[in-house]
Image (cartoon, rainbow, N blue to C red):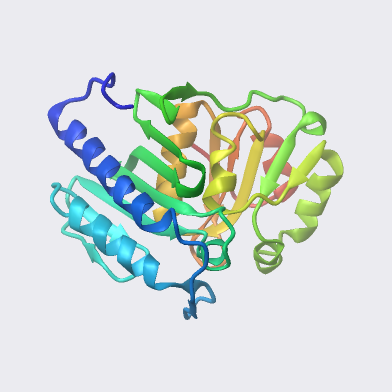
Length: 261
């Protein structure tokens, strides 16, 4: 999958380390059909497998010369040039309830700029990855995002309506729904991945953490998708990614201070 990518030695080590981490995450989670969970302070769910996957990924990535930021309890920050961002199981709610729309997200920055992004979907045997200047891939195939230029012909997706209610954006989402050809609530990393090969034309999500957005920004850029962000009410990020031609219209409807990157 990565043998044709010509990278300098350090980036090659980073890429191989990420692939090794994804392989282990997949092995741990691919045969799990349901799991007990507990409620975290932020209202999200936690399972024993979140911690198990995080530990295995941390053990691998800690061998590289990079800081590490993880969702749960592990991490290492020494202000290095490179930094990993790890969501061991994105879509824990789906994972805990036997819904296959979950996976692992890993991103890498260099001097705070996203340069690699990875999404592993264990139940679908799909792996999305991007490397700066080398493109975006689904398994062995180079992929491209949608180039749709008409919202009335676009399929869009977004996450939980409850999140948009908390961001005071639910009315705007309803306005977008009135214009768009179709909208679907494909969730978490499964839904995100659909934008990179043009299966959907646009994805909108709110209140995300950097262990999610770093990878998504890299995957967007390398797939040819546009990417825009604004601070959420809680100080996280609201993001839009997909067809570059649709993002300005979506921003106009949503309102607020968005930055197209």
